[in-house]
Image 1 (cartoon, one colour):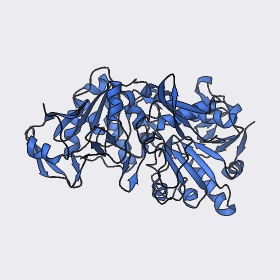
Image 2 (cartoon, rainbow, N blue to C red):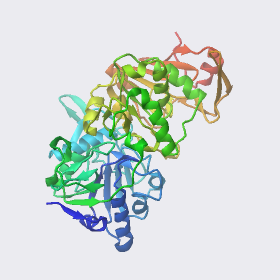
Image 3 (cartoon, one colour):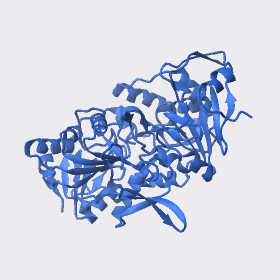
Image 4 (cartoon, one colour):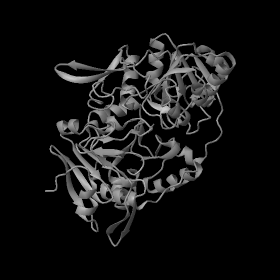
Length: 504
């Protein structure tokens, strides 16, 4: 039976050595006050300590002094298992200092492993991750020198087929943010951007004899409609009410509180950007790439567009009228709207549907997308891509591996070089004014986020769209299929590469 508790009372349910699963998505839907109560108790008593934290999409507020950053930094956590670390500014630095164990698994594989645990199955089988960094034959999921847990990802064979088996520690604390609790303890998510893995996390925690803690904005007397009760009250141990300040109409637009026609998407993007202090950058390089990449869209496509340069694809899809003829999706579960970016990435403007995250990754893993547009840090001569880890830094693989695993057409959007590249465009011709100091096309990527070998076996078509040319993946390596007007093929493409490519 649930109880209404204060944050300080609820954190008493968390014991030393517990495994906490947090239902957040990067910077959104974080139960902030619960994290702060954990930190307060840890500073005062040294408990809870030796924690393991699991989160499919990671958790943070893009602020190293807020949310869980304090108690992680001060030593309450022994192990982190996340799909993405981008919103956890302080934590990302500490991981590379070997302060605690940290593991990066594909976002969808964590989501599916949580769902498996909720059903009494130790782990989840997946082909996602084969031949990538997470594959134990390659590097394994450990990020730093002390992360050597080989139980999280294992190579197995079923019916003469290779799979990766993803197994998480037993979750015994569910930490959830919801909108409201009714008098029966049922939790609704009406004003939330997503529900994520909430139900599976709660089911897993209860199956393992653990506790479910839900932070909500309000209590309501009238029971919520059954289909809107994402978490039934019988699964809840503690309800913590923390009234939230009004978000404003911009953020309310992301909760589905009112209908937003596609013709108003741009207006709401601008409103949200102003409220979040985000700056919409104009970039000639990204414009060129986005315009060319958008030409690969076809009416009726189901699409995922990554962050960064790929976001420019949507601008040109709108200009061409294609945006109204395709269906966009986002990893957190949104379908049929326009994905927000920046601090509220994971939310969607004008979504037609928002369902559980594990269901979204069912779609992605099984080739349910028609096309995806992804960024890249490096591409090597084989066509492999590194998109998750740079030199001395990393963000994590996120949903990238799942999205690109079986999608029939994968379009990587990246500049040809970096660090100083300056490009002009005039009268339809491209002029490389200054070359970048760092090549993006290299002999061998430093870490594999996308396997060219696996893509060829799957029969996927793969393009690499830059500001000066387009490559296509073939069984013999990269093939140069297009050079833009104004670009000297020999001087500005072929001579800049450290490896040969097919040109005929």
